[in-house]
Each structure stands twice: as structure tokens, then as C-alpha cells.
Image 1 (cartoon, rainbow, N blue to C red):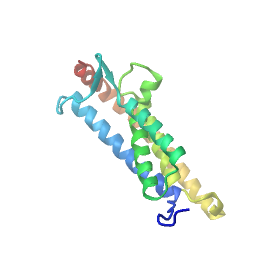
Image 2: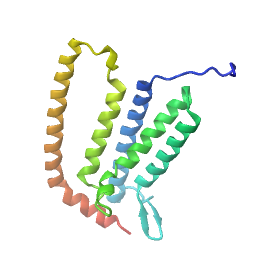
Image 3: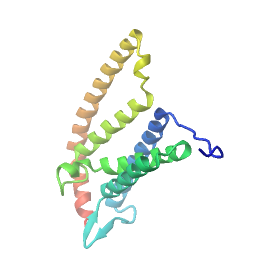
Image 4: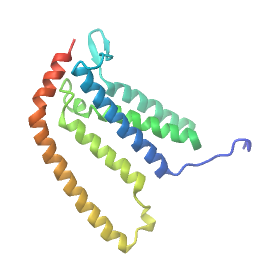
Length: 183
């Protein structure tokens, strides 16, 4: 073992926080860029191959493959593990931002399934980031967990009902923008 480069292990919760951060940031940037491109407030820098728009979920899939391979074969530690977690979050956001297209090939970018998938993935990353280890779970944590579960269910209900109303109100306009931006 080479002692010139000590192995520094990073706690998995810290890596999950890095992934969560880059996931949320990438999702927000991707949605903003798409909206600006479709409304013609930003130049169209989409990649087209033989007239076919290559969606950013493809970039995410390739990044996931690269990060997965790197993680398995190189087993990064220290700063490399943190960078790997950041890139993993970016890849997950690019991929899950267009989750609805996995289900309905050729469907609209603005599918509700994509936003729901992003919320679920962000929630799972947040749980991995901030949940106490199961060994330290004590009886007084149960009540905190129960309150948090009720709050999360309530929040989910609000997001679902609000999302449905927003989709009904703005969905037609977003689809018009999407159709108008096609080459």
C-alpha cells in the first residue's frame, strides 16, 4: 500500500448530499433552459442527428453508465468520490427530467410523470442524505418519524393537486411552445 496517498473515506450521507445538490440544480437548469429555448428567449442549442432531436435523457444515460463503471472499477475515495457523487446527481437529473418519455415514447416534454419522478428521486436522495442510521433509531425518534411521515403525505397531496391544476392551466401553452420550437 502506498502511504504517500492516504485513503480518505467520505461518509455516504455526505456523498448523497452532493448528489442531491447537483440533482436539484441540474433539474432546475434543464427546465429553465428548455423553457427559454421553446419560448425563443435563448438560442436553440439542442443536438439534432439526421433531423431527430437527441433529448438530454440520452446524455444522462451515458453519464450514468460512465459514473457506474467508474464507481465499480475505480472505487473512488476522498475528493474523487465527491466529484463522482456530483456527476451522478447531474446524470440522474438529466435522465429523470424526461422520465415521462420513457413511458410514452414521443410524448410531450412537459409530462407530469417526469416531474413526479424527479420529486421521488430527490426525496430518496434526501432520505439517504439526512436520515439517521437505523442503529440509532430509538423510541422517541418514532414520533418524529410519524410526524414527518404525515407532513410528507400532506405535502405530496398538495403537490399532486396543485400540479394537476397547474397542468390544466399552463399545460396547453407549454405544449404549444414545444410544438412551435420543433424544427
